[in-house]
Image (cartoon, rainbow, N blue to C red; front, top):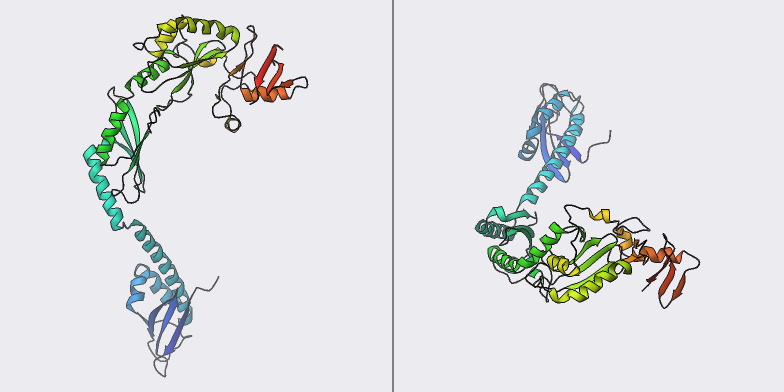
Length: 391
């Protein structure tokens, strides 16, 4: 057993060693101790039977919770030196516990500035209603609030409070699309209530946009985005087997004619492109984008409720996945879709491929030719000629 930390010093108060006085030093602190023997004789090696122990106020307070243990060790120790060794061990343990307690108490203490922030925060949240607060960061620097728009949709607003709030304004981040240079952030300042009211007004500007998005989700098979996001403006929906259409909506004018791109083999997309060009004048801003497209293309999109997007065989014919894995996405330009967007032009085949997968496949084939940054090779399925731009 290792010797306890610290040391002790005891000296006789009389010639007969009937009274010993000294101190015990542990963790840099000194505690006074006095032992008085009964009967004749005393000293460090004499039995403590019948002896009396006296402690100074600091020692008494420290071992208050260990009083029974100290008493037991004093009565059972064979001599004074042995007891003082055990007392040092007890004191070392007691001091360690005391330090931990003090550290915990310090951690719970709130500085005046933090108290002011907490008071202001509670005051302002009480004004807007605690039911609108989804969460508060323990550091009091971030909180999430919920808003209902004019159509009772639930939106989340993230508020970031600077260290010197409320002297400096918080930053509110909305999950809304970016349009015409408008930032999704609100930095105008004010109380939390005033900020949330501005956010609600801003959110209601996108009422028609939310309608168009909800209509896509309800009435079509949406391939992209794969997860719901109120900030997405690009949508890719199924038209038919091996064919999809990509739309880029203008958030503040979602019913207006938007950018349209067909994805699929030319044999499938060609006739659709002809109809689009012939009937584009029929586009009406009184109709939802889906309704306009179905009218112009003279078809009805597969429904997300009645059909599964994966039933249309849109996965890549090489990696057998619809979306690229994360490590593969890093190698793809940001502008390039993560979904398969290269197809075999053979109408009897029409297999889709990721651009990066097709490039890797063709480069591994000995007879693939490269001309003006374009690879020319054979389709992995039907052996028809297929090409892909490597830029």
